[in-house]
Amino acid sequence: MTIATDAILAQLSLAAYSDTLAGLPPGFTPLSAQELPITLGAGESFAGGVYRNQNAAAAVTEAVLDGKTSLVVAFRGSDDGLDSQSDLNGINRDFPLFANLVQAVDAAAASGNYQQVVVTGHSLGGAFAQLYMQAHPDQPGGLTYDAATFGSPGAILPPGGDARPTNYVIADDPAVYLGAHRAEIGEVLRANDELAELAAQRAAEELPGLTQEQALASLGSLTVNYENRGDIILLPTRDGQLAPEADVAALSQLDPARHEPELYVQELADAAAGGGHIFIPTAPQGNEGLAFLRDVYNSDPPASGDAGLRVLEQVLEGWAQDLGGGAVAGLNDAFTSVRDEFAGIGNDLGLI
Figure (spheres, rainbow, N blue to C red):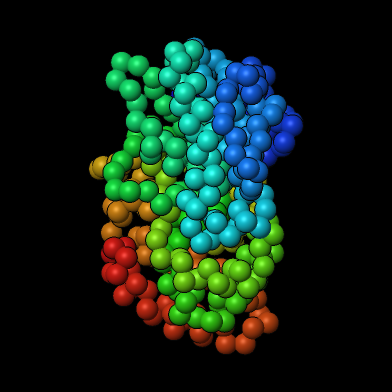
């Protein structure tokens, strides 16, 4: 799909946060229960194009995208405490809540009324789009599947690859980096109780409905990195930068405002109008700069030597300083002792 089309999908992903699909972009029609027959279990609902099951929600629409009649599903991102716990403990956990919706979408896709199925979503919604794509290969000579994600932290995926999704990442969006390096960060936090307490406090302040105790309880599960399959399109930082050094410095600030869906809508509109962006292919062979950026923003096997380790060190040191400020005595000394362990951690996790 084109960036202009993906910019419209960013608007749809924002509308998916609303039970009334407020802000639904022109050209998208919500499907009714008559148009998408779905078997609903206890606690499930489908009305006005919005499917809900406990804390899981998605918008189901149809539109013509790039000349193709499309069935378009936008998964909602995190908006409550249960979502926040899933983000930390295992982002795949709630995807089975969409089982009846997926079955209905698959039936509609097989009806012959559509040329393609497109899935999209912001944040957790982007992770669900990745999981949907992993389970839906293209049909040779028939139906195709496509995806665009916005600020997706990734998901736990089986070995393999998929070039179809396009993942838009604002260069200083901390959620994407924290998902891609979840295991390494968990290793560091488990080794430093003081830093872990501060990180849990910040997580409770920033993630919807999450408590500090729940954040601390998640530390033991931070052992596997999340992954986004497909190409990455990197969008500028707050200062309009796309240089690797500036991106890393901005990431170390861990500003949650850089993850907001409204910001992705704005940045995609700018990119569609010719604004700056960097295309990072799935396999950036022969280009050290792109390989470096791929290592920073995704958990692919590193292609740029120990550059990823140095970025992790810089980001986490900035994080420690930001969390502790000058009020926590000995924090920098404690963090230095953890940093001494990075080489071993990097070897264990295949970073170097």
